[in-house]
Image (cartoon, rainbow, N blue to C red; front, side, top):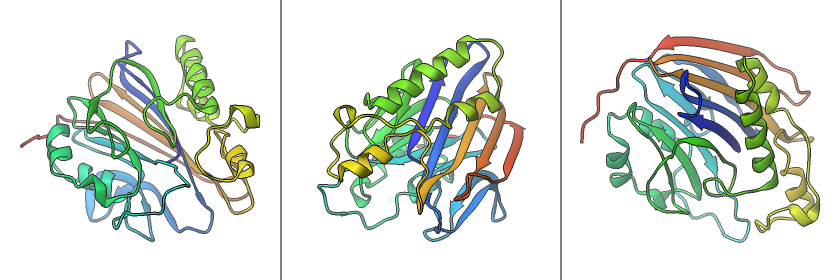
Length: 257
C-alpha cells in the first residue's frame, strides 16, 4: 500500500472512512480482497509470493493497513516481509499497545502501519515514535511517516475533506478521488534517495507505468454501530479490473493482554 487517506471520527455517521491505493509491480502475483478459506473471519487481499497482506479487517472489528517507508539511501535490513505485520495483528486478539510490545519492529524494513483493535485506532512505525493513538480528523500516510506533507498527500487530504463535506458521498466517489494521475514539479518533490525521474513518477496518487502502478483502490466505511462496507477496485496494466463489494456487521473484538 502506498497511499492511505482516512477520516477518523470526522463524519457524524462513521467511525472510520478510509481509502487506499496499493502500488505494486504488475507481474507480482496477488489475490484480490476476499474471505480467506483457512481464516473465514479474515477479509483481505494476499501477496501470493510472501503470504502477507497490505490491508485487511476481521468480522470482530479489527483492522490494519500498511505502507512501506521509502529511503533509497539505506540498504534493506529486514528479514521478514512487511506484509506479515497486518496479518500478525489481524489474527491476534491483542490490544494495540500489547501488539507493539510483542512485535520486533526492527525485523522489518521501514514501514507505517495503522491498527485498530475495535476500541482505538493507532499508528506505529519503525521510523517514528513507537505507538501513537490517532487523533480525530482527516489524516494520511504515504511512504513517509504519519501526515508528512508530500504534495500528493496534501492534495488528496483536501479532496477527501471536500468530498465528505458535500452530502451525500459514496464508495464510488471515494474511489474516483484516488484516481488522480497528477504529478508534481521537481521543486516540490521529497528527496527519498531515488532518481528524480522516478520520484516524479511516484508523486502521483494513481501511478501508471510500463511495469509498475496502482493495482487496487480500497474504500472502507465503518459506522459507529459496526456496520462495515468495503469496496475494492482492482487494476491491471491497462487500468481495468474487477470490483468487489463486501458488507457485514462487526462485533466487538475480544482483546487480551
